[in-house]
Image 1 (cartoon, one colour):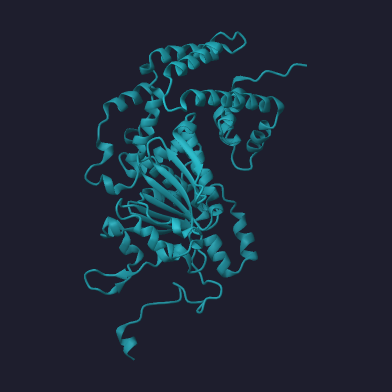
Image 2 (tube, rainbow, N blue to C red):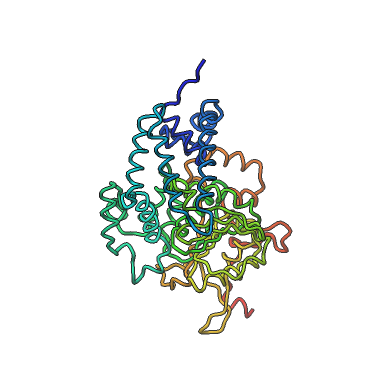
Amino acid sequence: MAKKALNPAEKAFAHMIAEGLAPQDAARKAFGWKCESYSKESVRAYNLVKTVRIKDEIERLRTQKETEANIETALINTDKVDMGKLVKFAFERLESIRDNEAAPAQSRFNALKALEKLSDPSQDVNLIWRYVDLVWRGMEGHCPSCHESFPLWKVKNAELADWRKRAKVKHVVADTPYNNSALGRRLELFSHFDARKSPHPGQITALASPERHLVGMGAARAGKSLLLATFAAMTGLIPGAEVWILARIYEDARSEIEYLRSFLQTAFYPLYDFLVKERIDNKTSEMILTTKWGSEIRIKSGKSQGSVTGRELEMCGVAEPAWVPDELYEEVRARMSSRLGRIIALGTPKGFGGFLSRMRHLSGRDPKTGKVTRLKDEQRLIKNGCPWGQSMLIYSLSPKDNPEYVKSELEAARLELTDSEYAAEFEGLMVAAEGAKFPHVNDTTIRAITKQEYNK
């Protein structure tokens, strides 16, 4: 008995899986399913990949892609590109689709259109403009320091505006209640990364912040990994930018990597493999994402301290910073000077140690008085007069803001954990570290003393 033919949505689903999309993301695009975590639709998407019809189609597509890649390599991976052979290969491949009577009519028509565009390459500009549009949005929405006297969102790009009009692509400046705010531009850009989600209030606080550095202390499931990956993806859209995601070990950044890859795959689908190259550095074992526009995103391990030097950065995102050694702060901070880079540390506190605590309790010598000083949290806010270069937002993310959070877990965990464990893991608070000399000394048990008290 012959297998039932795939319908158009199933073919689209198989094609996206073959291109590297996760089953949930592919199902959202192909079938319009929501595929929320642990939902029936999410399970159905994973099971659909295992069916014989879908598996066979995925294998066929991957085999075809591999064959084409081998032929393409043979044609162009030489000292001198033979354009004649390359064009001949493209024509023959498209003609075989056009003349295949068993192929769907839409595929044959698309092949015919592609043949016309290959004859006149100047006609095939839509995908190029998609790339230009996203990169332009990325430069509009990144760190505000560069836009004080030259805001890119005020620059009129007539050709890009014309393409947006023809392609019916909305632009945040005119289409949202946030108007020309940095938050509005960032939220619009986030919609290109993941159209099904909207940042929750705790994440909005960070996205709206004009401060240079960000320190977010949050409990488990507060949305820290998604937020860090969002900043990395946005900064990575800047041509020539270098971005780090630093973690104690590579495994600690697994969630950030998954989000980052998903964001870029969705934004640039189906061109991700052509615009972004993933590789592993043989010397450091770092994962590196290199883009066609010259930016680079590196996943760094705190264990390889020798590699945390010698680079100039636009941004360093620190995943689970409470576990990253605090001595790495000075190395990371030194990488920020020439490009006015940002440090964004988001994680769950673990006592008073690590990179997170170092940023939370920064102190230094006042250049005017020569005295060692430490600014209070509110003194580092731009709205209170702090210069942008010294500014830092320090705040807490609540898991209750996350719509995917199971709130009944709070009561269950309260019965199972000690006070300090619960405060760290579910309230995102810095509490006494195990084995500390003065374990009960913390921000809630200390106060400033007056001069009179000191002199007694």
